[in-house]
Image (cartoon, rainbow, N blue to C red):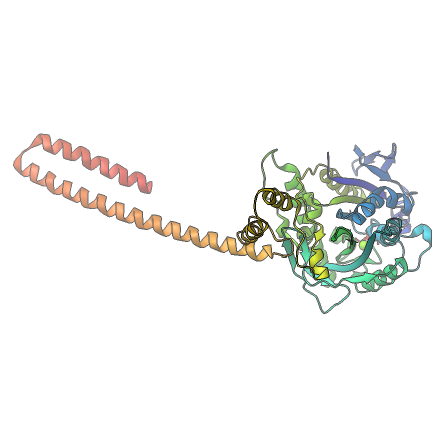
Length: 475
Ligand SMILES: Nc1ncnc2c1ncn2[C@@H]1O[C@H](COP(=O)(O)OP(=O)(O)OP(=O)(O)O)[C@@H](O)[C@H]1O
Ligand SMILES: [Mg+2]
């Protein structure tokens, strides 16, 4: 089964497309999952996705199919990510925000406003025994730098990885949200800081990838536990053909960076889908900030949904075809999930002395407690954490640093090994040369004494030595 829900959405023809290229469309719907696509050469391709939203589809349909299940899971501490992907001007930002986050009629509200409402609706239904807190962070990846949209002075946020919590944005601003109206105000203030520019393809083209992160924390007071789930919405910048968008100067530089990170995303999807079964192949998550941030979503540690946005116009058929092919490939991702621990330390938040451990650690320690003294088990636990056999769920390890350390150590160990090998080879070579010289001396002596038998033996030994030396250096 695939990890990713993939849907396609075709927006209505724009007035520019109508006036420049007429009403010709490249998509012919068959049902809610399948359609036939006509490319530039009038060749037909049949595509099937989890759901197809045609031109007349409403925002609410997309929300209910694609996002609502993930919103419900996030409230139950299961992380989820929703990504809008597609060519510039294809309707990614419209799907995410509607015409405007704050001022738009309810029918046109985007996935963001609906997700914020949905989160508060969901927590309302579980109120009583559980106390919920919702926090919001917003960042954009602009020219390969992660910028905090709530605090523009944080313009190069570092991406860290914790073995327990997965990918984290170090020091990002988190704002506690009191309700849906507050969420919309905050979203709107963050969006106002986003990089947007005008191109020939889109009057308000996103020049950055924008990432909205809702963190939903639930405090289970009775069980003394805190659980949290993340709902991440990603509005990607669109791929663009520079000759079509007319980009130049700064806009051209932006376009190049956007296209580069989108092709890194394509490479990650290829690596995730092309590996042979049972083999772990290298996934180039580190090739761009975008793929690094999406590592959990693509690697299976999160519920993920992808909305492939397309123009229906025949004039954009080749770009739409490539978006649809991207979606088809993403559907084939079958990554093995690495369960992340979404339970925080109750102790950390409440000053108690004992921390919550992850499940397997707790099971092992409980087994020990059945047979051993509590104090011995506590001592063992500390030692296990110290030795790295158990992880302390509190510690946010900076795996980036650890990765660099291991790489540096490996390189210097290799240098050392090569040096040792060269020394050994030199020594062996010198010994062989000395032996060959001794044999040579004997041969000269034998010739002088006319001893033909000894002479043949020495000659054999000599040619053996020479061929050994030759084979060693392969000359
Ligand atoms: N489903 C839709 N219904 C009506 N209008 C739409 C729809 N989708 C997109 N549009 C309109 O199309 C135009 C381009 O959409 P949008 O800005 O969302 O594109 P985008 O994919 O985000 O492009 P970019 O990558 O350049 O940011 C906007 O004017 C938007 O209002
Ligand atoms: Mg956009």
